[in-house]
Amino acid sequence: MPKAPEPAPLITVITPTHNRRSQVVRAVESVLAQSLVRFEHIVVDDGSTDGTAAALAEIRDPRLIYVGAKWRGANAARN
Figure 1: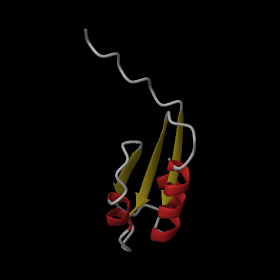
Figure 2: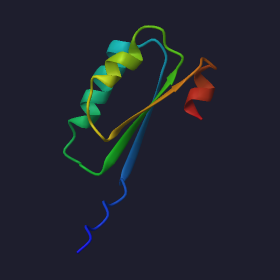
Figure 3: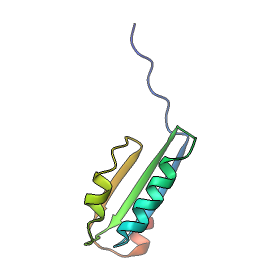
Figure 4: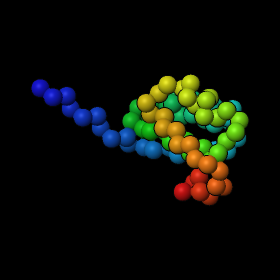
C-alpha cells in the first residue's frame, strides 16, 4: 500500500537577513525548537558576506529552507 503523503506545512515563518549570522542562527534555532511540528522556516539571505549560508547549512532540518540571493536591499528580501 502506498504511503500517505506528508501533510503540507501549517505555518510558514519567513526571516529576511543580511550579514546577521549569529542573530539569524539564534532565530532559526528558536523557531525549530517550537512544539509545533508542521511548519517551514524560510530564510531569505540578501547577499550576506559573513558566513550566514555556511552557518545555516550546518543546521540539518528539513523544515529549514535557505534562499540565497544577491544583495538587492531589505525590501526585495521581504518580497
